Each structure stands twice: as C-alpha cells, then as structure tokens.
Image (tube, rainbow, N blue to C red; front, side):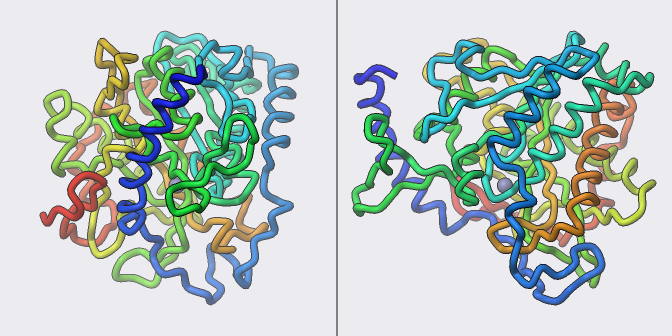
Length: 392
Ligand SMILES: [Zn+2]
C-alpha cells in the first residue's frame, strides 16, 4: 500500500474505530454457557487444549499437501499470487485461498474470520480434501457444477493469538498501532465491510478477491458459545443463521426478496438433511432475548447488499450467503478434544448437503416458510449495526 493510501486509510480507521467501539456493546452475545458437563460437549472445565487446534502453519501445510496429492486439481494460492493490491494480514501473513472444481458457478466458502472459532478451518480443509479426492458421483456433480473458492482461515493473526479480532499493526515496525486511548486497536473483521470500514488489511484483501470472483452463493462457518434449544434442556450443536434477518428490515428489500427466500430455503434444506444423522441438534441462530441478527457490516451481509466500496464493484454484484454456528469456542474454553470429531463432521455434512441441494435444484424447491419450523425463540426484534435494536 502506498503511503498516501495508507494515510487515508488511517483517517478512515479512526472514524471506523469510533463506530466499532460503540458497536462492541451490541455484539452478539453467546448464550450463557453452562459449566456442567452435557451430552454433546463433554466438560472441558473451562480449558480448551490449544494444541489440538489447527495453527496457521498447519493450515498452510495441509493446503500445500492437498494441492500436491489431490486427484481433481486443488489449487492453493495466496492473495498476492491472485493479484489483489492489499494481500497480507496486519501482521504480514499471507492470506490463502484454495480452488477446486471447474463448474460455471462460483461458490465462496469461508471459515475462521473470528480467530477463536477454529473448526471452520478443519471443516473446510476436510471438504476441500473430499472435493479434491473423492471420485463418487456426488462429488463429481459438485466439481462439474461449481468452482469452489475455499478460505479456511480468513483471520490468521486472530487465530494465532486465539482471539476473535485482528489487531491493527504499524506497517513499518509491526508493533500494534495505538489508538487515541493509547491502547491497541482490535477490529472485528466481520463488521468491517462497510462504506466507512475496511480498517484492517484482511478486509480489503478479501473484498478485492470477492470482486474478482463474483460468486453465485456462499457459506460462512463460525462458532458460538454452548447453547440450549429454547424452552428445552437440549444442547444445540449447530445453529443456522442468516446475517440479514429473513422478513427483517433489510433482506426483503434486496433483489425483490430473492435472497430472503433463497437463504431460508438453503437453511431449511440443511435442517431437513441433517435430521437424518444422530447427535446433531439444530436450531436457528439468534443473538438472545428473541432478537435476530441484522448487521450490514458483516462480510456476508455486504455480499448480499452488493457493496460497491471505492468503486471496486461497479456492476453491483451481490450473492446470497448463509452461516453456520458450531457450538463452543476456544476463548471460553468450551471446546473439548472429545467433541471435535463430531462437530467437524457435522459441519462437513451440513456443507456437503447444502452444496448437493444447490447442485441438483432441491434447495430451490423447499418451502421457505418452513424456516419457522426450525426451533427458535419467538422473534421480538432485530439487533443491528446501523440503528441499534429495532423492535419487531
Ligand atoms: Zn464468529
């Protein structure tokens, strides 16, 4: 980045950070985590064994291995190689993408935008391996129909530090850039795709790549705290989310409601397909108190809104995206090694079933209104990043 660009982005940073600070209070809260052991997530006594969590080096190593050993053309590369102007994390790490498949529709799959939410990496690397090596008709269909753009670790700095955010760094010294309060500045990368955002390098780097790809649809993989299904004592293992609430203040106004319908169809399809498997208990993602999330600065929200930042998306491309929330995260110490396999497997199944349903057209046949059948607390309002809480 040139000095001049850097300067203007620094001014932008201070503006956006003021906004971020205000929003920190309204960030989605994990539902109170029960300390006691439960069936799906054996007690970790508040300790997650970090040695069992994939590091940045593990991810890069696995990508290179899959590129070398896969039968069906896995290509792993950095954003520098892809040619984006900004292409490194705040700490200077390379940002990786892997592609596989040669179908006409592009699919965007991202994980670990929050560094303390690790299984997006495991799940997407497993899916990448399956797409790159599995010769069965199902995977053949996926490769013929789609070209996948897989980002297993969107936030490498946060992942290495085991924190949600990334920390802004001085590009020359590499030291944290202190804010007006003389403290390091943490940026939630999933609130940074806004007209006044793009404060962190990772955001602009992946945004430019998104404008190069113009995907057809996508999935974003997250974690939440431990959670019980509303009104029951059942542990939730997976919550299905749409970052602009269906029927809410924003989504019905996009593309004449096309995404309001399709995103619900996508998630109802996942709900239906995963009920075939045991030990998976699904509900709808909510932020607490019956509130739905309706954020515009989330990466996948900005994709649905067709954000045209600094004229980089002049045709106003947009695409629908849904997100998955796996239960448990590392910073609360609620992820145990025992549950890891099951949780990763659940995510991979959810991704695979969604992709197959999109490929064979069964998603588009789902009754979107059955979104109401997925367990959730009655909706009272919308938690936004642009107007506080909007009552229903
Ligand atoms: Zn997250």
